[in-house]
Amino acid sequence: MNPARYLMAPFWVAALATGAKSFRDNPVIGSETLNRRGLHTSRVKLAHAMAWSRRKRLAHMISAEDRAAFGRDGFVMRSDFLPRDTFERLRDAVLAHPAPAREMIQGDTVTRRFAVDPDFIAAVPEIKRLLSNADWRGLNRYVGSFDQEPLTYIQTILSHIRQTNPDPQTDLHLDTFHPSVKAFYFLTDVAEDEGPFTYVPGSHRLTPERLKWEHEQSIAAATGADRLAARGSLRATPAEIAAMGYGAPRPLAAPANTLVVADTVGFHARGLSVRPSVRVEVWTYGRRNPFLPWTGLDPWSRPGLAERRIPFVWDVRDYLHKKGLMRQPWRDVGVLKPQDPPGLPIG
Image (cartoon, rainbow, N blue to C red):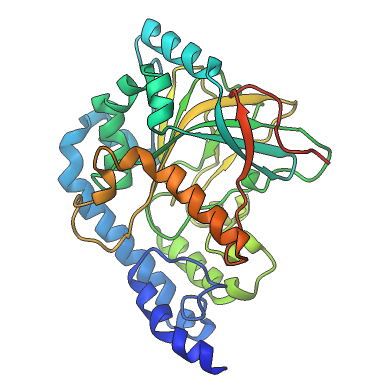
């Protein structure tokens, strides 16, 4: 070990008390010796226990029916989430609005995102009603186990835009080792054969077989060939998932005006699309240090700050990318509308 790595050691150890997940980038988290002795599985069990403890304190924010559905499945799916006329005004306003866009290409799929920032909210005031909806707020908070404002985007998935390997997001995976939330409010119809969000019901809960699988994966993840798994987003085959005691993956075909809120510590994927398709959704993402005992006290959730986080993060990553300190996969593609063709050059 060179001297610089010795200097980093305290930071690597301190990261154990955070949501840091990369086996490859942190030699402590990825240590074969420590993970054989249960380091990874200890973090998993503690993070899950603390998430369920926080959810008990947030249970009043959602209905008993939604709590039961989440406890059983790991997601809540609500059709006709908004009144029809409210939904149509929101959909039409979002789809017609040109805004600064970022895109990333993975395999044969382009993902486009627009920040729901102060400029977007001012131009599309219809989205304020969604963001202030009590069920919307409650489900994002209960599933994520924190009383925090999630990052909110308009997201477009454009599939089969080039002839190459499938999008790696179509592999069943978990996002990280601890509970976290993603929400999908579909503005367009999503058919079962056009890349629906797919989830393994019940896989947000630990089983002895799941912990055994997590232990085995952690031992070799740092040196494995799968880049995403090495960075902490573990992949599993259908056979492995069945061996953990879970059922079959369920594709969540959804008509427009359907909301799905899911814990992405459960196994999930983007379903395969049999044809070129375009899916547009309001998409949220919430993740916080899983070892915090409290539910709130998040300064970044304050009005005036919450809606400015995404442009700030993009700007910081752009700067670090230019300095060669960080990879920025989200390319600025100018001003687009959600259903426009890809802005990235397609080779």
